[in-house]
Amino acid sequence: MTKGLFITFEGADGCGKTTQIELLDKYLKENGKQTLLTREPGAKGLGTKLREILLNYDGEVSPQCESFLFLADRAQHIDCIIRPALQEGKVVLCDRHTDSTVAYQGYGRGLDLDRINMLNDIATGGLKPDLTIVFDVDVETSMQRVGKEKDRMESAGMEFFNKVRQGYLEIAKKEPERVKVINSSDTIENIHKQVMELIKEL
Ligand code: TMP
Image (cartoon, rainbow, N blue to C red; front, side):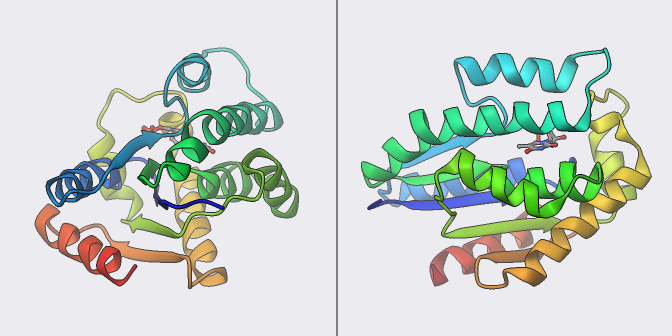
């Protein structure tokens, strides 16, 4: 049994979620909560090595291989970092998690969704977030925010990112209790207010 709260933040590259997680973390800490701010891929240790390969390797990477590397990072992250923090009663704020693999490798790369769900379940040992916030913004805006210097994943192109965006919206439709969508084209302040409303409900 976990005692803490597990909240994940999702969206296409350039959706603005990292800024929002930092704002929420600051708010929770100022209000006396113990938090863990973490991310996938590459929270620390072995994960940072996997992140380096996933984002910067410049040779061919098959979609299956890519999925397994993200899943390997997730298994390590859940076992060594997330589960222990939840058992200590912390609020875990995680920048990307299982839905990224569904959106990017499933909807984006076209891998079988049922298989990805099954592999996610193995990697997490069945642990599910209490809340997932998807930051939704049109692809043109998100690519502008990413800028010219793109990593391996960010270089996948507009068509890919349209599929990723649609993927996130489908995930939210399938699991409306867990997954909430916020329009991320608004100001940082207004988006933060919407995040706070969801957190207070939780
Ligand atoms: P970020 O930390 O800047 O969001 O970069 C992580 C990149 O990895 C981003 O492009 C999304 C991608 N990604 C996947 O494709 N699948 C996954 O399961 C995860 C966690 C991330």
